[in-house]
Amino acid sequence: MILMEQRTLGRTGRDVSVVGQGTWQLGGDWGEVAEDDAFGLLDAAVDSGVTFFDTADVYGDGRSEQLIGRYLKNRPDADVFVATKMGRRLDQVPENYVLDNFRAWNDRSRVNLGTDTLDLVQLHCPPSAVYSSDAVYDALDTLVAEQRIAAYAVSVETCAEALTALARPGVASVQIILNPFRLKPLDEVLPAAVAAGVGIIARVPLASGLLSGRYTKETVFGPDDHRTYNRHGEAFDQGETFSGIDYVTGVAAAAEFAELAPEGATPAQTALRWIIQQPGVTSVIPGARSVEQARANAAAADLPPLPQATLDAVRELYDRSIRAEVHDRW
Image 1: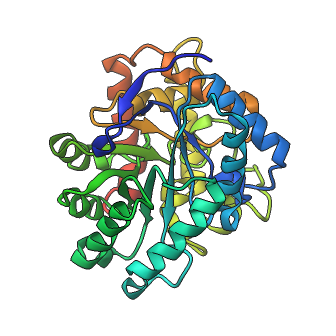
Image 2: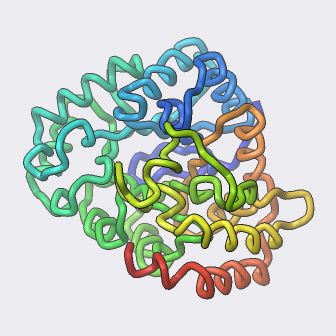
C-alpha cells in the first residue's frame, strides 16, 4: 500500500489520510453501484494510501455502511478510520434529536459496520437549533460513556452552525462544504477550528463533479442521480448538489478553473490539492464511481502545493463568477 500524508483528526487524536474516501455514492444516490465494483473502488482507495472513509446511516438506507463493514471484515490489514453520520432517519425537527433515538441509530450503524464502537459519529446536518442544545451534547457524551461511539462531531450546512459547534468542548471535528467554488469557510470557520484544535473534513470537494471539468451544458444525469432531482433543493439542502451553484453558471466557471490545472494534474486533482493546502483542513473526502477515479483522487495528495498565483486566480474566479450567487446564502 502507498503511504499518504496523515493529519490528526481534531479531538479524536487519530491520524487520517489527507485524502479520504466519501461513500455517499455507494448508497445509490449517484446511480447504482454493484457490490463488486464498490469493493474494487475501496480496495483502490486503501491501496493508494487512504485511511479514512466517510459514510452515513441514510446512504442507501444503510447500504453504504453495510458495504464498508463487509469490506473491512475481508481486509483486516486495512487500518481505516470510519466516520458515519446520524439524524436523517426521522423528520427534521429538534425534538427528534434525543438520546433514545441516538442509541437506536447507533445500534443500527454498529450492526451495519460490524463494530462494537463506532470511530466517529457526526450529526448529519440537523436543524440549526440542535447545534446549540445542551441536551444534545449531554446525550452525545452519554454515547461515548456507553462506548457506543469513540467520538462525536458535526456535519453542517452553514458557517454559523460550524462556529456554534466549535464552541463545544466535546466536538472532535466539523464537516463542511469547501471547494474552489465555496470559499466562505476560509473566513472564520477554518481559523476557529485551528484555534480550538478541531478537525475539518471538507466535503463536496468537486462541487458534485463540476470541478472535474468533464461536464457541459448538455450533460444529462440519470433520474436516480441527485444531480438531476435536487438541483434546487427538492430533496435535501441545495448546497449538497453542485455546491448550490446554478448548473450552467458552474459549467462555465469550471471551464475556467480547468485552465488553472498545473502540468500533469487534472482539474479534479487541482481542486483537491487546493483544499488540502488550506490551513486547518484535516481531510478531503471526494467520492468515486470507479477504481480509476479513486486512484486519481488519492494521487492529489502527492501534488506539490499550488503556487500563490494559482491561489490568487482561484479567488479571482470565485469573486467574479460565484460569490454573488452562493457566499451570503451559506
